[in-house]
Image 1 (cartoon, rainbow, N blue to C red):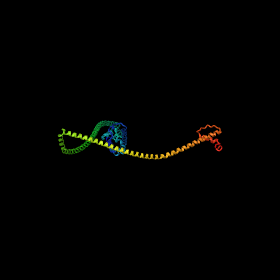
Image 2 (image 1 turned 90 degrees about the vertical axis):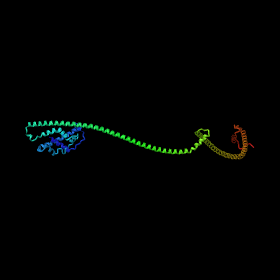
Image 3 (image 1 turned 135 degrees about the vertical axis):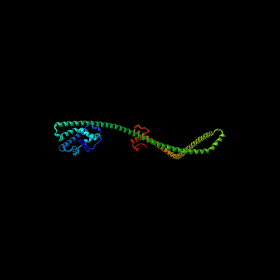
Length: 390
């Protein structure tokens, strides 16, 4: 029987590609996936039953192991369930054989007992029963030992798995610390690079400042030399000032210099005041010139206007004589017309009165209203020839 399972195990290793990525904890789980895998294994064992029955009926002269190998029990069969069971954990070949013995040994034993050997058929039923009980007891004892061994191995595997879990956590912690260490080192490196760049930039700036300071120092040295030469050249003036102090009311040279500066300042102020006064005079002269020019223009305009008015006056004077003669003529004509008008009015009044007397009518007509008088005379009197007026 052990040879049969070893043959099955070898065939599984030959026909199945083992996958090692499924956690070992799934071995003891009772999930639907594991139950389905066990069910598929049961189907394989039931298929073995047909092969063993064929061996019992027709090929008992052959060894069962060789018969299973010769007929390729797993050829063309779906062995994914066996592959999945093997991939549930990191298992050795003996562990897989133990699994099949524990799970399916009893069924295979019952299957083989259903087909006894030819030698056993000649024994009596009581002897066969005793032998079967003995074999069953031996098999049960062996199975218990195998279960205990398998249990110890599973405990060992669980312990190893727990140790691996602890090591994995430790490794994760170490990895996390290492990543943190790397991150800190990167940050330190970045800070160091920034600091180095800043220091290099500061160094370049200091070098530029140093070069500029050197240039300024060289310029100051040249200026010092120039001033030294100038001071040496001006030393004669110092001697002159010393002599001035000796022969004047001043006691120190700086008093002479202060007095000189005061005089220079006063001279500058006076010159500035004179310049301002001169500018004021110039501005006043300019204003006077503009004023005189404007007044000359006005005088010229007034002279032109005066000449024009004089011409108008002369023309008016010449016209006065003409208009006076005309006025005298008008007055004479007006006097004549007035006299004629008075005569006409008197004649009209006389006619009106004559007509009124002849007609014996009394008309309410004003003596000054000549027009009504003429109207009444013209409307009521006969022609001039019929009037008795000589």
